[in-house]
Length: 447
Image (cartoon, rainbow, N blue to C red):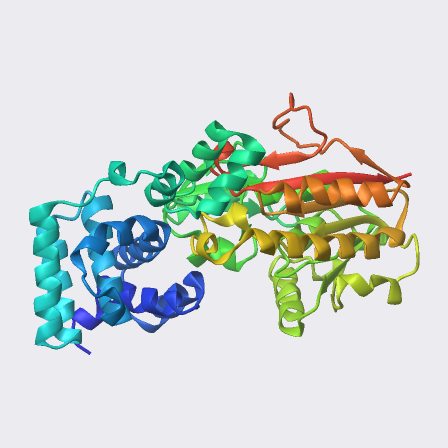
């Protein structure tokens, strides 16, 4: 393969064409990074281009449209190549336009035929001469917001209806900022001070989380490749996700059900609070055998396998395996639309519809209904999602409480007193609040 074929720009085009065809962005990137010898700078550029094009796809396609007369006749990779050029030109200040155009034309020449090279050269030069179309030319205000922030109109409307125009705009503007590299210290074997020292010794730059007392933010370097990661001193986990287990408040001798557990991030956090010598155990469920295996592997790496029983079971069938009032604590980290993760998984915005949230609501309620009898009187059940729509959050809790008068909603606690002045008992973390993932947490106590 030529040098062009190994460049981060060509690899980005290759990845984007596959992602547009349904592949997951994170898996595609990991595969390419493992298959090619790339230094840290090349990996950063590849990752930046892939996520950047996905994040800004509606904007980039709006800019490109006037310069491509017959878009349906274009090979998918040529379309992605032009979008990568636009993204670098408009969003990456440190790369000169000349370098972007030259490499884009070189890729077209090596990977295509002379006609494609001429076409790509012509489009780039015409965009440079004419300038890109202005957002002000879009008369419909919702479409203008959609193109400006590359967000679907339905989500803009739904967030405006639920949270107001100002909050909606703050959220959608924040979602195109880079995701933080956050991690959770494994308190089963380490503490914040030791992990910070270990990572600093490996030349990473570390900040403390303002959301979680056991959260750290890496601002320079890759935590996943460190010895500290290999030894299980921490795991990669968003700051918002770290709030769920402290809200559940598991005690050392508790029997805990983690009803939707894979890949096991919250399972291992629960397990770190338990003591197997006094009967502490977490039953971690998933319906897929390969994901159950993953939970077990994560528990082993985090040195808590003695407290984790990874089990292949649909949470809606818990009653077939466990008696009523079996568990002291239950976590339902429910399957959801994942709209709070758009910063980290940018393609979600184009894949989901409002109907997905309504379909998921039914499943979320089925899981809560199924596990509720297995909770002891006085026990706590915590419900969480990584979405920001009330259909999957507040509405689910309201419907559950209406059908289960033996449960009370209690105020979701946080160790650092987040949003302490809020009126609601549930806790909603929006993506613009702390630039973490969007999350919802509700705590229910059985009377």
